[in-house]
Length: 511
Ligand SMILES: Nc1ncnc2c1ncn2[C@@H]1O[C@H](COP(=O)(O)OP(=O)(O)OP(=O)(O)O)[C@@H](O)[C@H]1O
Image (cartoon, rainbow, N blue to C red; front, top):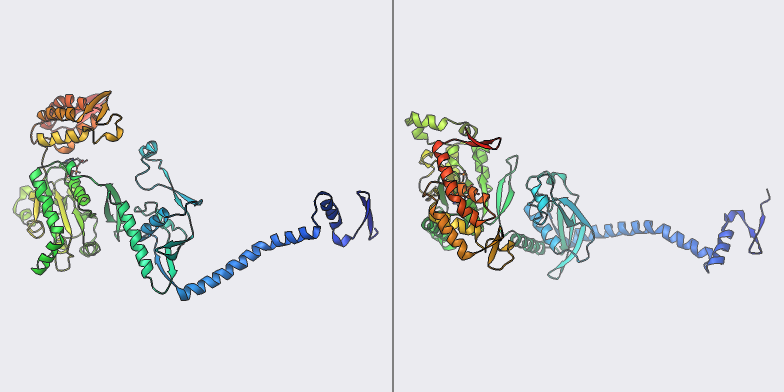
């Protein structure tokens, strides 16, 4: 085959050099349809091809320069993934995200669920998806200073943590120019205050993690107003005044100047379902305190108990629930065989057997090593079973009885359940609500409540029993007021029989 070939294109004779690999044809095609020269196109392709390599070079040069700058001119603070400060920082950064952010992370919501997605929140198996801005590193200005936040890879251990609420989970490093970390510390404080403001409508309840190693936020409950816990008003005011006085900073100084230990203990006692736990949560909300739940049966030893108490911060409420179920009065145990048999009966008490000792608890409550400034609340259904040492003044400073419901409290509860203010969110007519098509205003609700209360016998039902009745009639105040007399009669017969009612083929039977 000849080295030179000739071809005809557009009537012209073109000489093609085989070493040009046919660029002549391309040149001719380009010349025909555009004004571009093939040499320019080649340069363009070469530039595009070299661009990634150029980018890589620039990036590695930038990394080199940045790590050199970081080493000598940048201060930084690294916050581990599971730490509460990490979640505070992420919340702050997410809130102050750039307006046109387009990269998001989608995660299954771990918290209470989106209130608007009612179907999803009712189905246990289906939760809403939460979308949070995604970033690996972010530059931002705060108070005139330039900061950069960088995140490491998401740690899967965070998602298996029961306390994980879908925020944070990756280690974050905040850096800024300068040799001092003070600006970063200030930024962290701003983020913490921001997160606190977001959670001020909730009570944060802390529990030990599943390994019993650290305190973790276990759940957050919407603040329950004290008005919604019904019991003797005089005792309620005394209790509130006592706590208010104790938390006053002047009281602390007075205690310290007189060498008195600055701590306060309360015992809430009464039948099951009388509101002991509800009152504790309401008090935590009222005074803006976190709640630390101590579950004695799950503590392995006295030293673990001591460690636990040492890690609890000074201003909080410590809740020891159903304390009678764990230990029984040491002295009367040996004295009275009858009571011993009564107490030791029931698998409940066996299951609640504690591994730590009562003297271990007495020691953490007010021993030499115990911390000051806390409120300890113990609850019990059987105060008579408690060891006198546990409830002596200094450990328990005030005993609060929560009993069965009175007609006056039942009336308050009725108004709270059906008052137009409570239900305003679902009302279409201002000042009134539609219940089964019948408008009910506050005056009418009060008059129904007064008739309702007349049907309630004093000191017979627990508030939780009455709450159960209201749950059956949430749609209609009239139905609740009309149905109470027959409910009371039925419940009293049931209580007299002491039986357990169940349904069989739609017929109520008794065991
Ligand atoms: N005094 C009360 N006022 C209003 N609601 C109450 C009251 N007592 C109980 N309830 C309602 O009854 C339910 C159970 O109350 P809670 O758990 O606080 O009772 P408890 O005394 O701690 O019971 P237990 O001794 O069994 O732990 C809650 O839903 C609460 O709303």
